[in-house]
Length: 460
Image (cartoon, rainbow, N blue to C red; front, side):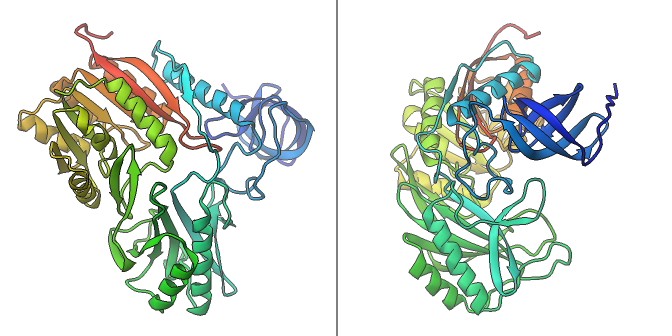
């Protein structure tokens, strides 16, 4: 049904905000029409300036906050209104957690058609400075390097060197890159023409070790004055262990290319999770919040309830973090990951930690599962930690054939999680427990860990 009310672009209306979207924008109703306003929170009463009118909805921006919500706070970041990163700088953290919990439950009910509820969300001890990775798009403007983040739903760079979510070392590293770019007359990449050298500046940090990796993503095979960049970074960044070039000459929005060249120091940095040491390469998946990651993995271990005689299959294993933290509790660990460098890291991580019961296979998850099936290996427990899009549909039939007793599913998107849980229900795997973990404070994202158990009865 098409909703139509007398509302046009540039109109100004009074609006009561009563909900939040999955991206963290406020939602109000104007004569039944949904109006989305970024930067608002439930129970705000505002004047909204309409900037877009569609058949079924409108988008507005805040003109005036008439009556602020009791849960509204002043943002502590001067960039938050324009940057596309944080959605909840203006909301109390307690209310943010309540919203994220309700969002998970909404997905379980509405998308997954499940009767299980998530009753617990594990909040963060610190909501600032927690990210161990940052990828900054850059722009050279009048000889100055502008680095920051994209504005909401755009590729327009909002300069920001002091993001509240990031450690101080990254800001110092950006200053070094900026000085090098200015003195070396560096050009920045232009998506429209495909020309220009510097595409992104990229940092990783091992929070337990303090080790820093700095990476320049370039549209080329080398950079001018590399010794100058090395010198500036070494002077500016405490804990610097690695300086890397990433070669990305493709006309694509994908940030990293496939080739890495180490300019200085190590090819990897190191970190420690739950007492295990890990090497992290530039391209490897590694959870961005160290402290919350440990809480997540402890909850996954609790759900798995391992007895010591199991075969554990860690699909989408990355550098082996989940599996290796559980390796002491199983008979055999098998990890599968599609990124070759991550698999090499996983093998090295097993060696570093004297884990001798682990095997790692470089393949995508469905292919790797089929390899194990052909070898006659049947895991007792499977850990799934797929990317945001969820599991490949072809994987579910293979899981059903493997017939593990338990599945522990870790997800960073409650919508695709709920979809996959419904599919697994049709394969006789019933969702038993769900816990949310706030891995990404002040952003709209939330992580979940789920326990599924095999049932002998066919699910309806």
